[in-house]
Length: 247
Length: 243
Ligand SMILES: Nc1ncnc2c1ncn2[C@@H]1O[C@H](COP(=O)(O)OP(=O)(O)OP(=O)(O)O)[C@@H](O)[C@H]1O
Ligand SMILES: [Mg+2]
Figure 1 (tube, each protein chain N blue to C red):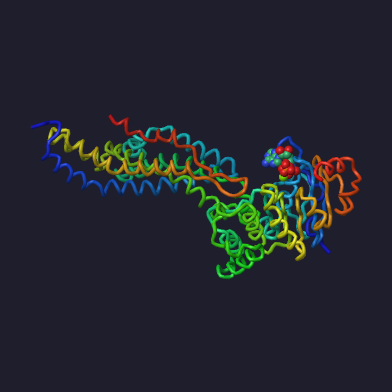
Figure 2: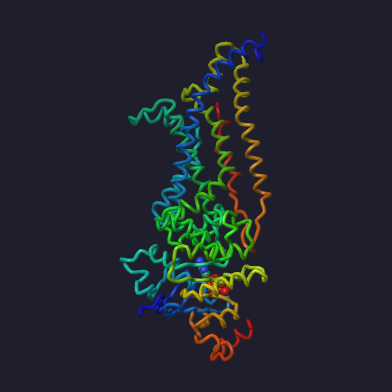
């Protein structure tokens, strides 16, 4: 029997791994909602006029951008119980994603909000809108369009980072594949897991790339002023992807 | 009768840069005050202080007898009564012309949508853009965008309007259409403060001309008189450059 690839095991593993997808999706969707809501809140605090709050949000963002997600998962799942806080694997996973990706999302939202020309806020305020109304009706709807491409990249990284949850025994793809590998003494399950990741990530990568190239092509029209602002925070955000650190 | 706008010894600094150095200005109802002055003299800053977009360091801004910076004053409420139009239009690019005009009446004044739409369509008609209601700002010419911006400000039914070089970003052939809207507005009795380099507009529509330089009002008077016969040397120099 070929210990590297085996057709029979391939079929078995495929079914086994596909069955983990609901769990992966659950963690991803909850993680995404929590991370991006938290990120939006953080970014608004970061841009608020209350200096202590602003600094606090900044410190949080730096801290969680500086921490490896793998460490965070392990800390939440194995460390916090020593402080009397016991979370299940899934909850730990979602919390870790929210804490870490919230920090990245906050930076993306901040950049998106700041990319909206100051004149927009002024026009809104001059019409009698409060700061909150101007944000809600004028700034955020425009910022959201700018942050879709970078957030798509974040989502891709998040998909890959669910694999880190294998160390806190979330029954996701990698965890299940590794278990199966132990049983069949064959690397085929890993190949299957890889294929499943790729099925989800590669189309998203294409979509993100397409959005970015479209953004570059859009031309402003009318008047001498204007121009399409964009969010240039993409590059270093890839550091959120720490899948390579898996032991 | 209480003045629409009263600036009393207004000082404004950006950090160490002292931009407004004691501005006194009173604007009565239905006046069209035209403000001219070299770049950097503080014209925009003064307009922005009138509606509280910029905080001031000293002095008083009174709007229809209310202290803009008074402890009981809600500046958002006061801004609803002061329309402002900007050099760079600042239309909301994610909304079409009609939605741009309707937004503040709906979100700020809590008007029902149908009523806001009626007001907005009427105003777009008044600025000659009835057929552009469903068009996004990016598909409008600069002059059309600026007329939408004027309609947007008027939708709040303001008591006064501030114009900050609203034709400066326009190609020359588009200036007239915007000025004509402003002229109609003045004729309808709107109180206006207009920063502009359009001396024709100042002469024909302005009820008072103010020359600012270095953060102070250097000279003011009747536009028709002051343009041909300025008293101050600085005013003479400036006018000889723009005329
Ligand atoms: N937000 C700001 N921060 C710092 N300095 C500012 C700010 N806004 C304006 N200034 C400075 O204040 C001075 C007056 O600016 P202001 O825009 O009021 O001049 P202006 O008379 O409107 O000129 P222009 O004709 O060029 O529009 C300038 O020196 C400008 O650089
Ligand atoms: Mg100016």
